[in-house]
Length: 524
Image 1 (spheres, rainbow, N blue to C red):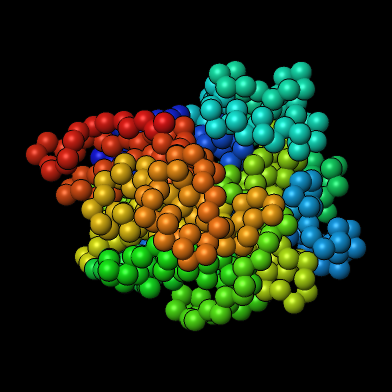
Image 2 (tube, rainbow, N blue to C red; image 1 turned 120 degrees about the vertical axis):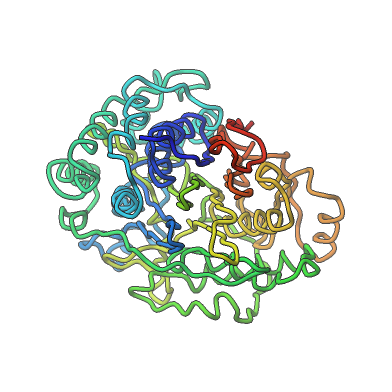
């Protein structure tokens, strides 16, 4: 096939290389994103895996936007009352309790149907090789293993991610032969084999052996939703994301209020971030079971409660991957995939090599809460893809980020900078700040600001009464962002220097207008 002109940005160099290979093989941006997502599921097990969830938006060459919500649900045999009896006031972070049916692979299947040109061998080849032959432990993975080792009490997880009961270190080799075999089976039989058939039976049996209550039907009945994105018109652009059960409304709420550049005062932005946090925590749930009205989430007034001390912030800081990709044919993809917290539930199945997420940690055990647990109910989600199109419906910016509860806030800052003329690299590397508690004892309106955030911004926030917590510049806890920006008939792309990532931009055909030429930008 003729190579495809396109661009991709991811948080790991090998994942970007997998996307590049897909473009060079004639694949679309969807093929590139799938190859990168599969590779990240091997090389970044702290942040993502095939035992996690996925959301995405795809823009096709006809200008249609396709939303994909592949967020999993709770077990049919569980009930709210049983969980309260078992756990008390809240579901634990580790163990089988917070596991929901992983949705990522159903999401991959839908994405392939929507816009892939290549086969599964192209999507999974780099991932299989990395799992089978091993991959060098990156800085991010080494740091997170060291930080979380004491909380990983599943002996199978420790055996897979460590050596002689210590965590793997940067530069050592992560070998995952069981995961390689699972990926080879998926390559042969298809992504749906995770949900029906021998592999599905093995997954359900493995989880049952560790105490989970899933049935084969919980997996077989699960399907990813193909949904229309939600969006607003803003400064001559169209900003699109996914609706509930995701927190995408938070970006739209901020953008709608910041309709002109004259309204970009940091104290107004902080207020908007606080409002979105409050709405996410009190109103967000699975709209299939608890109706969610989007209009007031985006445009309604909010009576904020007084800031309070947060004994245990339950939402993850990040522990997610985002992929941005686009091509000259008109395909564009924002894909977000996650374990939720670092290493998810910490539950590892040695037979399949799968580490399971802990997205069910977001369920409330309050019977009156919109985000309460229920059988076959999806929890509220922090994941949110973003595609921004111009007045003609062409891709302008493709954004994807980790950042947990702060994803909407990070997207807002990216959008403001890109719309203001920043390059992709300038947008992802700019100093960042967020509103919300990260550490036990933080106030609910704490502002975490990187040390190079302008003094004037920090002073104005402080004067408004926000507690300021200063963190180092380019700190990983404030997210890995990836951006592809349309430039003429070509692209500008960048991976966040807070990650181990890289961006790839293919050279345009001769005579096309692109600032620069074929290039790989390496983050960090």
